[in-house]
Length: 335
Picture 1 (cartoon, rainbow, N blue to C red):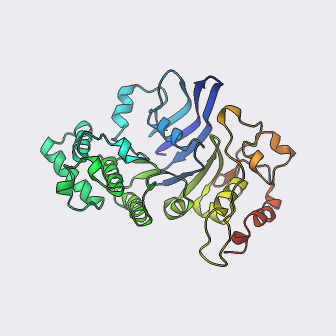
Picture 2: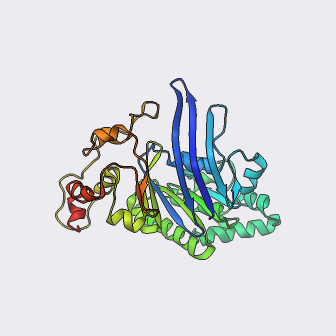
Picture 3: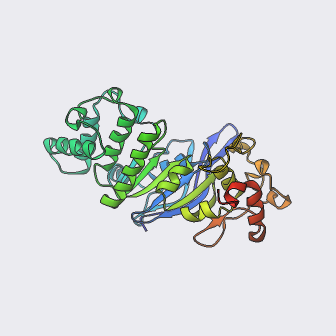
């Protein structure tokens, strides 16, 4: 197994006490696998992948649990060990390339710096490699773009430059945090095609964070749904779309505009807002927003089911179909 995360808990000290942003999260990523991580803003997705790279530090942060990359424990690892892995074996595509890229250096300089740190390439060879990478991600005229600064590139080009930097050292794992955010639909499709190409040509595994279930359907092998810092459903992509178990997953799927059938006057929505992490309700965190809640939701449900498909919900399997049809009539009708 390439990456194994067990019981990961990330907490932050605040005036309200210790706030858990990630709560007992466990998952694994195999070689060449694409894992989709979905959920609303504030559900703990980005904090989870930042913890993998050891980027959550400071006196007010507490990281507990186990993160193993190729058998090597990363929780509590030295900064030297983490620096060896960052950008080399594990790379990250940040959500906003405009703030992730250093504005006072050209994009080529930033790619070359990473190559020089993690490989034995000369400066001339590293520059040639940077031009090759920019060309590989579909940037026109890479020989000139390599000397341009981030503000001189469009949003799509900056995102491609960020992906080129992530690819520069042929990483085994890429952590992609909303790689298609703020991009138009055409560029989004190109970026997703590029991610699939990475897996095919470089054998790269990907953890893909997104709000967009359409993106997940297009690229991911497996999906984890997060809510309030917890995993509430985990399944293969095919199973999640064909047979979702958790009412929160029903709400996410119901918010996707249908491609066929009658046009809806209004898309279904999940009522209310995600809870404040400092004041999580007892039991199921989603219960206050769930139309199917019951008395047993006062106790926190465990993530249960088959190994390939699990959910943290008290709804029994025999009644799940009828309730889901009520929540998702178009899905039940095959629309």
